[in-house]
Image 1 (cartoon, protein in one colour):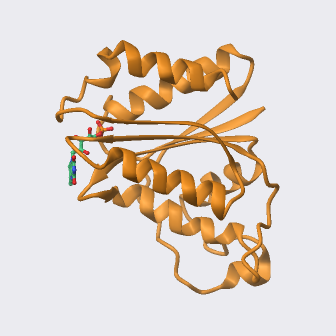
Image 2 (cartoon, protein in one colour):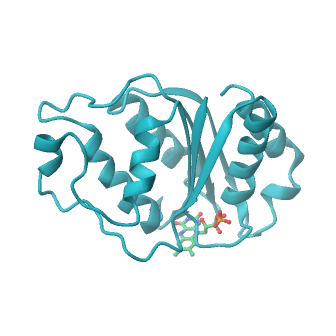
Length: 181
Ligand SMILES: Cc1cc2nc3c(=O)[nH]c(=O)nc-3n(C[C@H](O)[C@H](O)[C@H](O)COP(=O)(O)O)c2cc1C
């Protein structure tokens, strides 16, 4: 299987990155190929322009730094998505990508790529909101994009950048999810 991992946090060695990397490591140990994309360093990228070009072309018609991420997700068997909670929502880096998933839907809002991709969702908050946001992202992926959830990990960090990496329960959850790919 080919799995695409998306890390959207701007924090280097932060919480969501540590958990995504653990899921990826576990999936690799299970024989899967994992390609990881870091969204924050990408500078040439836009959100969805609502041009509806995708409805005619079957893919997003913008070409920028997010295009390879979208192409890889289209081809992948599995996806690992992650974001920190920023003001109760996903961070901007994640939201720009998520809106571009509009290109995976045809003019009748049916999926224009294979259904049934496995998806895992990782969300971290300083104090609150991680569960709600993880549920929302999972709902988008299973509802609109007909993915099959293999698990989500949502947690509060107290804004300690090293919290997840040092939490054996979270890391065990990540390892278990990685084996489901
Ligand atoms: C701009 C910004 C907004 C944030 N908003 C929230 C928030 O609404 N609720 C919350 O609990 N934490 C909030 N946080 C804290 C982060 O969600 C928290 O530190 C998280 O663990 C970061 O994950 P990361 O280490 O993967 O980057 C915010 C942090 C930043 C920088």
